[in-house]
Amino acid sequence: MTPKILILADINSTHTQKWVLGLSNDNFKIGIFSFNASESNWFKDKKNIICLNKKEKKSKLNLLNKLAYLLFWPRLIYQIFKFKPDVIHSHYASSYGLLGALTFFKPFIVSAWGSDLMEFPTKNWLNKLMIKFVLYRADEICVTSSVLQKEISLYTKKQSKIIPFGINLNLFYSNRLRNNIEFIFGCVKNLEPIYNIDKTVLAFSLLLKKYPHLNLKLKIIGHGSQKNELINLMNQCGIQNNIKFIGAVPHDQIPYYLNRLDVFINVSEIESFGVSIAEAMACKIPVIVSNLEGFKDLVPDESVGLITASTSPEDIFIAMEKTLLNSELRMQISKNAYQRIIEKFNWSQNLNQMEDLYFELA
Image 1: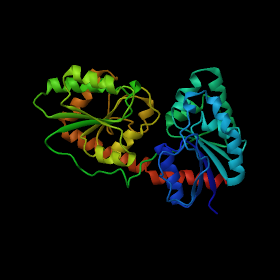
Image 2 (image 1 turned 135 degrees about the vertical axis):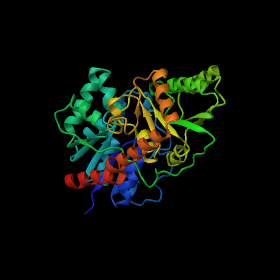
Image 3 (image 1 turned 120 degrees about the horizontal axis):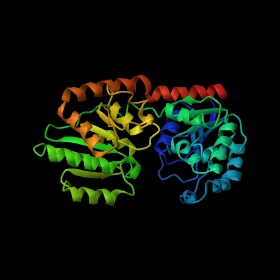
Image 4 (image 1 turned 90 degrees about the horizontal axis):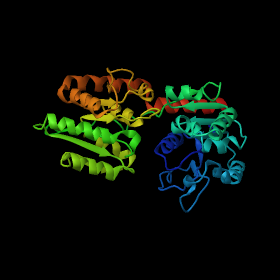
């Protein structure tokens, strides 16, 4: 018998939606309990997906202390009684993890996604204590990368399972929409300081100055607090005709934009995995990444993607120049990168890993 799974997670997260829809397609009955109301009806045609905490307005709890999430506890206990799950699975250890741990339901799974381990417990002793409690209560702990597995070991002696945010190869695949008129660099990321998009813009400016005769473009896909600052920087550099801000796009449209790029860039300061990099690799786009431990699962060496020496504009420029001038290099690393995705980050394989865990616990 297929287990009934109660998912505690942000209903508007593309990662949540991918997990839930994947499980639903394999005939799992899923209940979703989220602090926020759904912003779309992405699950309306799925009879085996139930939203267990319907709200008319989006919650403003993101403005409050994490402990305010405990206000949802009585409602969750009631829904557990009604839904009668075989397994409870909290996605994100610091918020949904705490709520799930306090139900004292077993079996209980916690999945850490990134900042819930790499940032949250480092802020104060209470946050650290909360994470230790959540992990103590968990029957199984899942992480998306080896760097998170190392972080987990700071707070528990329990073993964790690496189950990545795999890539749906039916959605992300090479569909060549490039032209020979322009050479297009691009990134898909929120416009926030930790992602170094400003440094990417400066590196691109250096490239334009050295190769003014080439038709070079930079496309930036995403939104965030740094948008106006980035536009001002672009105007100061006088490269507004070469940069285009696409804005946020629905996740299922990302492959279209990726397939228009010649090179993908992600030179973040902090990352636990790098989903956008994996998506580009699946589309056979050569990637440039910063030298982060969080990227090592995807790009262990330069046979798979170029790794910048630092996140300075000068070092990003060097990597951009290499890919621009060497078509054979681009072809080889994109081929190797695609093979790595096929072997290690195929969504169907990662989904099977999670389903096996559910069956084992239930």
